[in-house]
Length: 302
Ligand code: NDP
Image 1: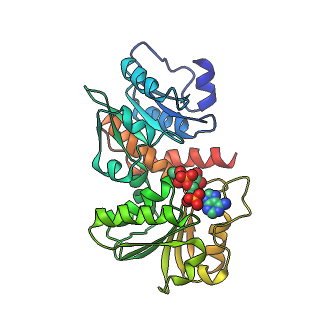
Image 2 (image 1 turned 90 degrees about the vertical axis):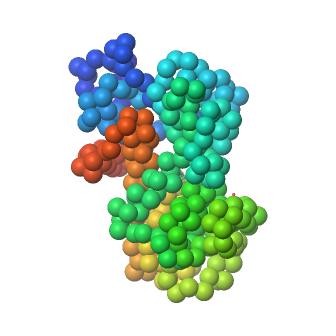
Image 3 (image 1 turned 90 degrees about the horizontal axis):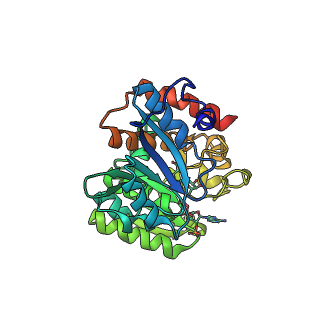
């Protein structure tokens, strides 16, 4: 445990981990570079909670027995990351309705019967956008990508009553399937699916973009899902879910065309804050969020 303490760099070396310490953690594969331990252990320290958070590398074959074992071991809560966010749903006693609609779970909360699944990515994105002064109500939103993260983006658009949503993806079938799911949820034709190359069909003069493809992720930092300047001239605000590098090529293109942009670090932070709040029944104040944000920025830029 002494080594673990040194790895996270946030838990005082003198602090005792005892037989009554609660355990939370992350399951995924890989998990070695995760920033979640830094966030949760920092929050536990700020709140003075007797809680430790670590990461468990779990294979697909071992997933269901890992969740069952975690429950039997008394683990308080788990986060779930790639590639288990969908498959983990089979191991839960209950699933929050929004997570059920999105079709992915990233947070497990202990109940008497087993773990209940939530999707805090969607609320993490919402709180990250609010912190940037951006709301989606009545806005035209362009979502780049139709993978797991795009599903959270598209459902948030419906929950926040966006005016019009375009889902652009390389594989247009996936964009169509997501648009149908969200339109069924919204009860109207909110989303239009397009191939990335058909972006010329977007008629609005100004929009918000949620960049949820994996293009531009370190080390492929010189790439963006859309390169042409005419598209970026119409982007008022561009949110890139990627946070490594801190300024992606997508963000640079938005800024160069006169728009405003932000990376996905605050989404990562706020989805963790939401999970921490669910596990511990607390509300994390803004000043604590900012404290952890500084640590997170230092860790990413290290
Ligand atoms: P998925 O693998 O589910 O989806 C990847 C998406 O990127 C798909 O739409 C895929 O298109 C597209 N894509 C990948 N490569 C290419 C390419 N060469 N050309 C065109 N399109 C491409 O990943 P996730 O949805 O889980 O994650 C997407 C990004 O969001 C990642 O970078 C991840 O790190 C980030 N993320 C950030 C979070 C945060 O808290 N900040 C939370 C979750 C994710 P296609 O369907 O055609 O393959």
